[in-house]
Amino acid sequence: MAKGDRVTYDPAGIFLPGSAVSATQLTALAARLNAIRSDVTGESVEAGDASEPDSSLAACDCTFRELPERMLDDYVEYRQQSDLGRILQTARWIRDRVDRIVVVGDVGVLSGIRALLDACCEPYFNHLTRSQRGGRPRILLAGADLDNDAITGLITLLTEGRSPDLLEDRWALLLVDAPATDLPTKLAGRHLLRSLRSFYRADSATVAEMVVPVTTTGNGEGFDTFSAVGLLPAAIAGMDIVRLLEGASTANDHFRTAPVGANSVLDFVGVNHLWRTAGPAKACGMRVWATALRATARWYAQLRQRQMGRATTANGTDRDGLSEASAAARTSLQPVGAEDVLWTELLVAQCRCDPLMVGHLESDPDGLNSLADRSQPDLMSAAICETISGNRQNGRPAGVLRLARLNEHTLGQVMQMAMLAVAVEQRFIFHKTGPDPPGVLGVKNLPDFAARFLYDFR
Image (cartoon, rainbow, N blue to C red; front, side, top):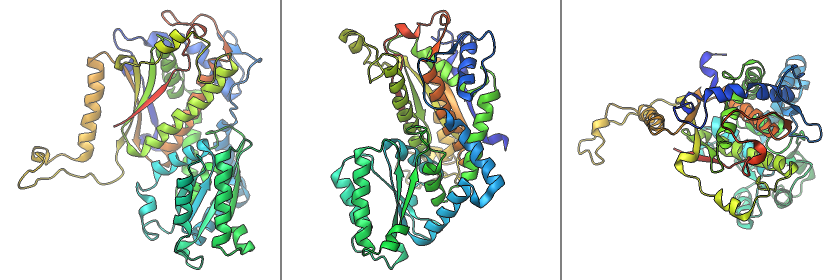
């Protein structure tokens, strides 16, 4: 792996003089974080650790962690007969036969698929011609809501004025089945299946070929991204899913071996936990500096919201993640001032395309000739540096999650790190602990333990 392909998290901008979070506090959390890491990885907890699992409760299933290595190992040994080999074969079969594939799944499933496609496909992939897409089908998503007009418009796009005899008009369905598939997903599947039968003139053999069922692994909403649920659409779109899984495996290795203070997942969860527990109005967020990663930020925020909501419900709090506090206490939690948000700056240092130069125009209609020798990436870097520098000057702490470049390997790291972070954070609720570090409120005393996660797009 190239050094530039490592994804790093730097909390140095959080440990400012007077900040609610210090490096000393993070160090004081090390034993607790290490014990939770052992729980996530399934390793034995070392004697003397400050916390131990509470067997009366159960946090999210962590079998997702083993999935990348298991799929890669099976692929090396069994090749075409492995799950990954079959995914690649199915993707090639679909690419040769249709120009559109509709993925039908619930919100969690579609959110993860959208994160994969937006990050690694061409920005306007579905608008390119088939030749510009390298013969890869357009990917369409359905099933996230009950919007009648949206599903009607999709059916019109797929069928009206189109012929099953033309490759450019042919389409197929990828149906994601989960143990708790919800009503919007079932309805979308029904409407699209009916339209598929009509489009292919009730040819049962063709209809059967054009319906590809995929079953979730049971890891829970959003944790199936590195199973066939996410990998098949990614492979259909031409992504290198082997490199994606290798990136996820790299994140696993780092999570398992790096100590607190140099562990991107544990440090991210630790400082965010310390910030949230520093006061009832504190919130954390992610400021996204790359358009291609906006869907990834949404996916993470949704995954965290679902899993933390379930955890706090199981721990005696209500469905919104707030404990049974008074109405006055609930009201006081609503406002979030700029000084109360701990931002994580999510950025990509190197663009994929050739840099666009501002250039010189004779009449200078927009007043930008003074920047003629600057490039678009230069101006983005300047904006990022100005924001980070301004944060520090104003005493507003912020961490940095940095990708040197955006590709399948770094995306695999980011998404696996996000899933691990959710699993670690959730386990704060399920572990017995001693006192929190000095200056930090205990979890049980804080109404909004699972506080909001905000995001901002730059």
